[in-house]
Structure formats: structure tokens, C-alpha cells
Amino acid sequence: MGNAAYIVQSFLGFGDNALVSAYLEGNEDAFEALVGRYQDKLVNYLNNLLHDYELSVDLAQEAFIRVYKNADRYQGKYQFSTWIYRIATNLAIDEIRRRERKGRFFFYNVMSFFQKDDKQFPLPDKRESPEKALDRKEKLDRLQAAIDTLPEKYRLAFMLKEVQELSYEETSRVLDISLGTAKSRIHRAKMLLREKLAGVL
Amino acid sequence: MKCREVERRVVEDYVGALTEPAVREHLEQCRSCGRLASELEEIDCLRRALGNRTLAPSDLPVRVARGFSRARTRRSLWQAAVVVSGLLVWSGGNWWLDRPSRPSPAPQVRETRTVPWMLDPSGLEQGQWPASRQQQYLEVVVPDRVEGSVVFRLPTTIEVRQEGPGQDYPAYVSH
Image 1 (cartoon, one colour):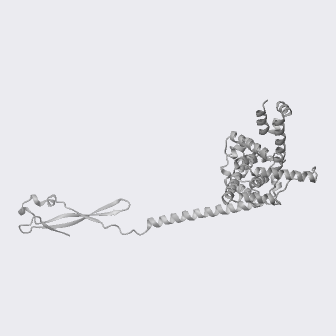
Image 2 (image 1 turned 60 degrees about the vertical axis):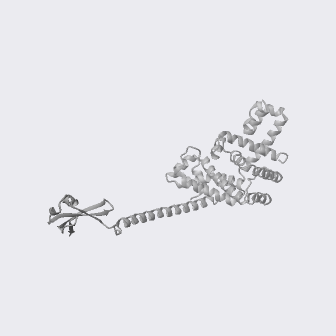
Image 3 (image 1 turned 120 degrees about the vertical axis):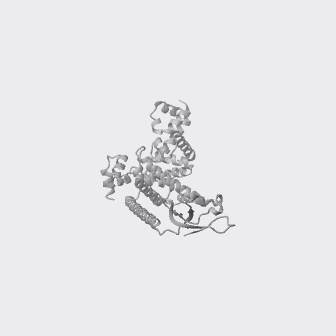
């Protein structure tokens, strides 16, 4: 792979489907541009669900490799983002189930609450004072902790729609549920978060 | 506008809902809905920040490329394995077809008499039995994998001798 930033820039005007088509025609740089376009989103999404940065990077890598291997099956019927988020979501669900089987999920949550997570990089807002930045980080941690206590179906729907900013339609496709169910889950997730965070934020 | 409808709109799309004058007016008048809106506003601001909280490592494209080459190597190994398996199956098939035949079941030999009356000499008087050499065939049925069975007809002779009285059937000897 070449210079990632340069490649991402050179394919700036291309849609995701055009990049997949270019890759299928033999342009490997097109695939690298897709990786550059989605790597932060996927790692962030997986890390918000799993709270294990290295594992999230590994799973994001696995998602890209699966896309690479199965690109010829992609028909462009849905958006590329739907496809890659679906792969990432399935990988995350597998990991959550694996932890649940081993009874470690609670342990991870407790540990992440007490540990300082060096792998997270909150983007600094240069206008904020240090006090405000600290306050903001604390609020973010509280929101994250509240999201972690949501049932899995609400957590995934909230993460995709509200944090990753997919549309309702895309969220329903990623989770393979109806549009109405997706809306209902997101509504329920927000109301639960509001209850959990009442008086805290 | 009723509280239930305002709640639905605000929860579904906080920013969009606030652009509607009817919703804004209701939020100014209803304390409960106003509190809901302010709490959702806080969550709405924070969830955006959550989306940018973690960045991928700068070497992720390199890791992905390494994964590709491993995937390619695995694919090449699979392809090689398929080719080798194909060759093995092909050569095995050839060996199977060309292998020395196992001993076939013993050929069945049956005698065919060309002289019908010999089959049932009981209709003749004893004195009428001819003492002569009759041309006969031996039918040899050999099992065959392709045809099922192959029948060979081998010429032979039969010597019919008339024995003395008291013998019901003629004795014969095949050569």
C-alpha cells in the first residue's frame, strides 16, 4: 500500500461504490482509499462497544479483509457503509457473546471504569478551557457508561444511528430489522439513557 | 400539539424538531417537555463527541495490507491444494481403471446340446439310441465389467454309447 493520505485525497470525489468497482477492476489503491475512509469510524464504533482498543483495531482489520475477500459479491444494492458496518457489527456481537459465555463482560466494564484508557483520543476543542475539557470528558465517560448498561439491541441501534450517524434506513439494514423496529429501539434507547443520566449530566 | 407527539418528534430528531414552530411553542409552555428537550440536547451534543473519540492507528492500512497478503497466501495455498487434490484424484482414477483385474468369478460352463432328443432320451426305445459322435458346444459365460458377461461357444464332441439293458439314459463323454 502506498501513501494512505495521498491515496485518500486522490479518490476524494469518488463514491464508495465507484471505489469498489475500481478495486474490482484491479485498482488496489481504490481499496486503500476505502480503508482510509472508514478506518477511524470502524475502530471508534468497535471500541465504543468493546472498550478494548487493540481488539477493536484487530476486528476493524478483519472487517476490511472480509470486504477485500468478498468484494466481488458486493452488488451495490445497499450502501457500502451498510455492508462494512454489518460485518463490523457481527464481529462485535461475536466478541460480546464470547465474553458473555466466559462471564468476562462485567469484568471488562468494571475494569474500564477504574482504568485510565490511554488509547482514547478525545479530539481537543481549542476554544475550551482545561476545566471545561475535563468536565466534558467526565460527561462523555458517564454517557459511555450509561450506554454500556443498555440492553444489546438498544445499544447497537443507538451506536449506529446516534454515534456513527447512520440514517434510520441504514441502521435497520445493518441490524437486519425493519425500519419501524429500528426507530422504536432508538427511541427506547434514548429514553433509557435519559432516565439513567437524569441529574448526572 | 400534544405532549406525546412532541416527545416523539424530539426523540426521533432533536435538531429537526426544533425547526418546527409548533414544537418550539409547546416546549416553551410545557415544563415536562422542556426538561425532556434539554436532557436530550445534552445527550445529542455528547453523542457526537463520542463518535470522534477514538482514532485508528496510523499503521492500520499497513496491517490491513499484511492481512491481504496473508489472505492471498492462504488463497494460493488453497488453490495449490485443490490442484494437487485434483491431480491425485485423476491419477488415482487412472490407476483404478488400469489396475490389474482381480480374479474374476469362475466362468460358468454350461453344455448346449445340438441334438434335441438327447435332452430327453426317455421317449426313445432303448434299442433306438444311436452309437455315434455328435457335434456339440460348450457355452462358457465369462463375467465382464463392461458388457456384463461374454459368452464363448466352444465346439466339442460328445460320444454317445449305448450301454447294456437296464440303463435309463445313455452315457456320454465330452471332450
